[in-house]
Length: 156
Image (cartoon, rainbow, N blue to C red; front, side, top):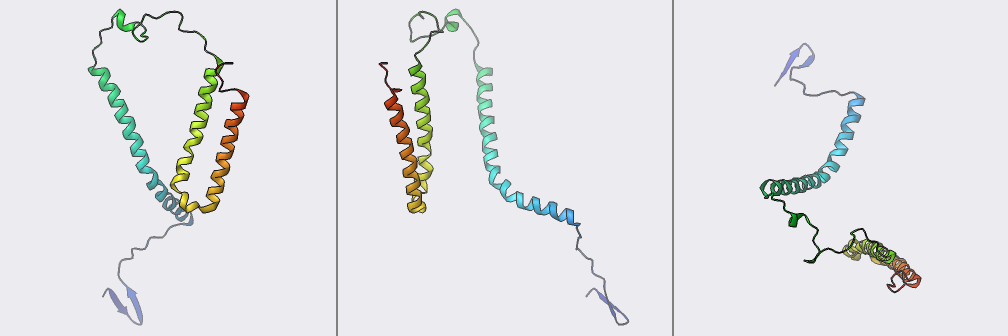
C-alpha cells in the first residue's frame, strides 16, 4: 500500500512526517525538556503562593470597603489596657530585654532544624544521629556560654 513500482525501483509515495531539526534547535528542546519536570514540581507552590496573596488582599480590601469609618477622639487615642496613657511612648528599655529577645529567636530558629531531622531519623542511621548529636552539643555550648556571661540575668 502506498508503494508504486517504476522499473526496478521502489518508490515510496507515503507522506513523511519526519521533521528535521538543526543542532541548535535540538539543544534548545533538550534544555526545555529537562526544565519541564522541575517546573512541574514548583507550579503547585506558585499556585499556593498566589492563592494566599489573593485571599489576604481580598480580606484586606473587603474589610476596608465594608468597614464603617467614623473616627472619633476616643478611637484615635492610644489604648493601654483601659487606663489613661502616662509618660512618653519613646521611653528606653534595658539592653537585657533586647538581648533576651534576640537569644530567644536565635535558639528558637535553631530548634526548628530538629523537625526535619526527626522526620527522616530512621533513614539516616548512625551518621545522622552523630551529626544531630554534634549539632545539639554546639547549641548547648552556646546556651551555656550565654548563661555564664550573664546575658539571661535580669538583676544586672
